[in-house]
Amino acid sequence: MQKRCLFNLALIAALSPAPVFAATYLPANLTPVQLLEKADAAEGALQPGSYAIAERTHGSTDTQIVTRVQGANRMTTERSGPFRIAYGKYEGQSWTQDENGIVRFTDRVSKITKALADPGDSASGVQLLGLTQADPQEYVLDVHPADANEQLRYYNARSFLLDRIVTKYVNGVTATTQYADYRNVFGLMRPFKWTYSDGHPENAESGETLIFQRDAEPVSLAPPESYALFTVPKGAPLELPAKFDRGYITIPVTVGKETLDFALDTGSSSLAIDPGALHRLGIAAYGRSKERIGGDYDVERAIVPHFSVGALQMHDIELDVVPIDFESHVGLLGCDFFASGVVGIDMKDKRITITSPDSFDPKALGLQPIPLKLDDCVPDVDASFDGVAGTFLLDTGAWGTLLQPPFARKLHSARPLSPGERSRIGFIGGDVPGEDYEIPNLRLGPILFRHAVAFIPSNRSSDYATDDGIIGRDVMQYYVIYFDYGTGTAYVKPNP
Image 1 (tube, rainbow, N blue to C red):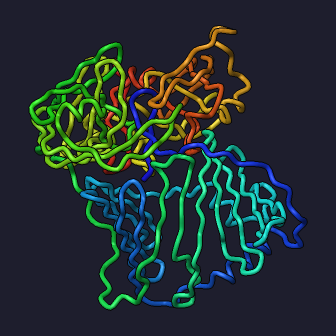
Image 2 (cartoon, helix red, strand yellow; image 1 turned 90 degrees about the vertical axis):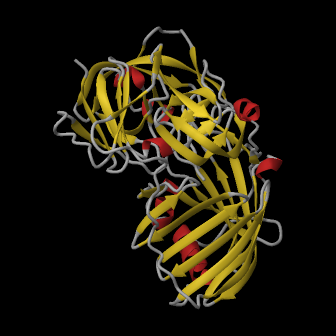
Image 3 (tube, rainbow, N blue to C red; image 1 turned 30 degrees about the horizontal axis):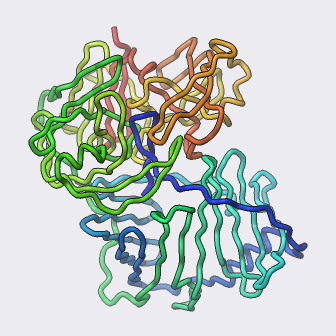
């Protein structure tokens, strides 16, 4: 489950640091291409047919996993306590369904996956480091595309099966997955046991395959219909109660009998609540784990029986439980809220509206479209700074615009706003140091800023290697903007 958190008001799933030490390897008489060919041959291929697979993991909570496979189509369901998620691939399209039933589709392919698909390309960042000296010997393949996470893959020198993967994330995190007990099932060599560790006991996990058999009663593996948290009446937009304080967008939310301040935050891939607020409500939390952005913090999950925003009523809603210590806010209205209707934001007139997708007419409102990428259920957009193109999170939970260091290095025209003056940005896990820069020509769809100001961090502890940065409310405040997650589009027009 991947989450993302920007500034004080969002979420990102990550891992925790564990040390990785340099090693000396013996020479190997293979190329990366030859090694991966041998690994593919050793792994084999699943015979045509329909299969049912049952697995179980043990960690901070136990999870029951059921996967069904029909050729290239597959569907996995995970149940952990009262929570259920699902994901799969159908006719080439990957999809996920979260705890609240929201379905999203993704086309993202990681840089590591792309590199492994073409290891012979000199630009892929794939190299064979050599053979380990200890027994059993392993071939060590280093996969490190430019400005991306790095992965060390250890292949058994005798069987060529994958023993373990060590992933070093750009935010300073290292995680290790080890595989064991390989068995041949219908032509495929598959590990029946595995472990995961990242240096935090809360995140340690072990797993095992219980059943791998032909499916006697195949079912449709098409993705399920997406739920909505609420139904927006057709017709005129529904105006929501909102407060605009120093540019922040605060929505009063009733949880049980209490009214709490939640931030309206496209940068959050979930709904979230602070653990202190949850405790005051007397609601239990489940399954603590450790995650990171800017620093480490705890994450749990909870089910809230009653949750309302204005006239919108919701029941038995899953929320992530994370520390939210910002102004008066104790919660975040993120992906699942935005995915349930068309949300309009007008910062100048201080209005938040929500419209039924069936009633929303962008042409009648004089709006221009900006395509969104919603791979992580947060809105990424294509934009450019001084002609250099990139992908950026359009984040209502962040006041300022931020550029990650790898992208910023491409901008030769960037100039410090106040040379020598350092600043810091607060993230959910801690503060990140950096400096403000002035950059010419920010272009986002029909939007053009001749002079933009962006914060550039001095390290990558806030970076998850999926975006080049953030475009915040400092840009969005000059526009009326509608987020239509159903069509994957933001609609904008200048705010007169």
